[in-house]
Length: 150
Image 1 (cartoon, one colour):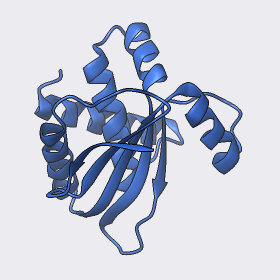
Image 2 (spheres, rainbow, N blue to C red):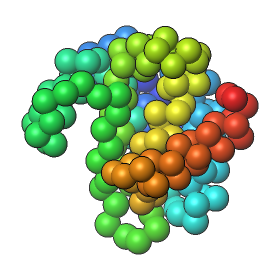
Image 3 (cartoon, rainbow, N blue to C red):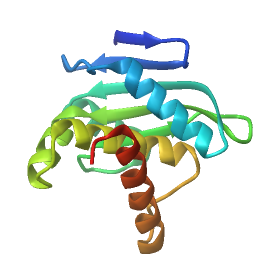
Image 4 (spheres, rainbow, N blue to C red):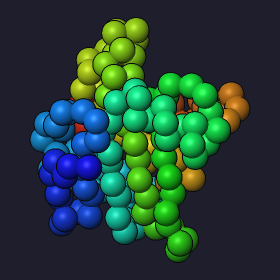
């Protein structure tokens, strides 16, 4: 695993695995994520974003979740204390690229939507049923707007 950028001030780290993707403006993204976490009443402990390929995330999906499918994001919550954020968010760059074309949005917007989706999971939101999915999508859209991506 190769470290792309460390934003230790915010305790958010960016890594690359099986891809050459590099996040543009990681300081701005880290600040945005920290603001979201704070607005939701949580404290950031440690957060790792691992940008990866279809193959890499597919293997994680099968091994850890038993899902035989491609996905754009997998979130692993590592927090031990209430109202803290600590975890790993795996982001599939190939799925982000394809989904941006399908949903006719920019790569940057789709990437940040998926990043905040993973963070929302760490904040206790889920997308298991229709109402929860609606709430999560509304939160994603609201927070994307604060970053100026809508």
